[in-house]
Image (cartoon, rainbow, N blue to C red; front, side, top):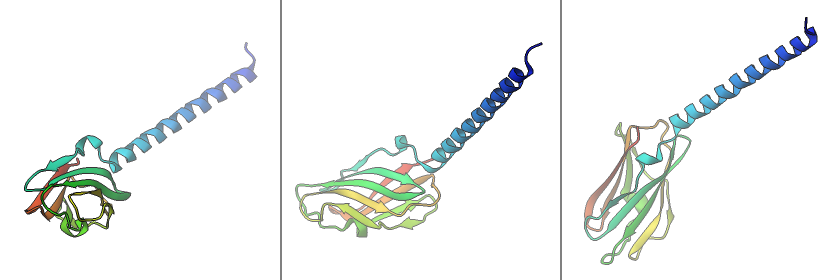
Length: 152
């Protein structure tokens, strides 16, 4: 018969190893669940460009989680009109339930001139909508420019 000490010690190591494996697998699944639930796939958030009128407007979502402000990189380009709009005043974010959100700030170049680029920042939306729409009004003679991204 084999030494009972070795059998007991071996059994303790095996049980401990199994418990650690189960614990770490559960943690990994839990973390990936929260990542999937909270973050939006970058594949759904491609840049959109609107070239109506005299101004080209490009918008690229940057950051969209339920735990941080939502950021949109925006670039306006023209060779014929002055870009003197305050994007925090003429922009609105709308979710699938019709809730509207105004920007909390603009980080980028000042208005005026023929080129304007920066990041338009909105407060985080607490629960992820199935889609969002960003509306920019009265830029370059166009009453409304609509940018829409499907999230779910």
